Length: 360
Image (cartoon, rainbow, N blue to C red):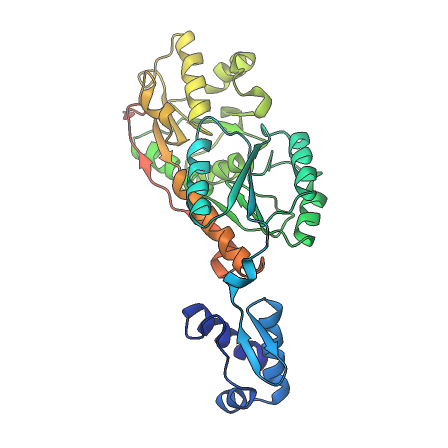
């Protein structure tokens, strides 16, 4: 680490800790030179870094002062856009509720849109947002496992100075933080439980066009392999957004691939419920004829004919954390503190119910 960066980091830490309050003068250049045993040029470079981050400002002949962020906020737009794939069902109402609670308490206006997980709809929303004055954007990537033609629109928003934070999944091509469940660990958790319950002939029903599906598969597969369980790709069925609600179109393939399986890991509760209905139609009961485990721990897991064993998704807590991270980014002029820059992954835990039986 360079000497000027060391000085800058120390000052930034003291500002964050409240040692130097908004409007308060920082130590003089001479004082900092003596404290760190560095040159005047080194101190000035450190102060330039802080000013570039929007943390300080200089008064000619008076010194360097901590930025009064509250005063800086006055007169600026208080609108924050929130864009999710869906808005009125599954986990999304609780995520949005968590976001709104935090942002509204801070005096921001929340503008909600949804894409239906369609890239074209995402494009329309982003183009509209480019015409608006926004303080920030919280968004869930559409079909995040696929190459996305909308990345230039995100870049334009970033160039405008709009902080962007993703929820659930982001795009590899964008250097933006993500607040999400640890999806790889969710897959590992599901695999560990099935193995503990004695299952060895295991299949998977996974979503191919969302990054969460790929990560959950990776975690699930890695745990099976670590346990020495051979995995047969013919026991995995992949579906995309267009197949949701239409598993009957894949009925023959699903039945053929899961024939001989004692358990199936599903991408989420929605897929699990749809699979259970398909199995029931074909005379296969859960868990007697096949065990099912899934991810998200939604109301679907609780109120169906069979209680679903499901890896818990934080939902409202995730929304609150996303809002807190975005506020940190806004207050640091889009740079954010370390946690905001890196995003946040929630730990996993399993809600055990009746859909998995012990395999003898």
